[in-house]
Image (cartoon, rainbow, N blue to C red):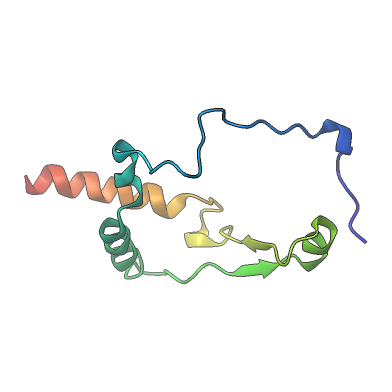
Length: 104
């Protein structure tokens, strides 16, 4: 059975008063979710030596305890031997910035 690691009384929820599900996503933040740029990153990173997809582990006991259909843990600990969960994004951004400055 799932054993909580903290008391429910310690949990506090904060809601962003400016958040609106009906409002369109602000234009100045849309570049973050650029589909074409994301696909370019996937194409580049998947060609790097040693790349392999990140394994997902199902956390069924936790999902049941939380009343959710499923919870998955994305295990990035083995990525390129770095033990870092953001190793690829940072490395790709450095490559992108270097290419931008060298090519232009």
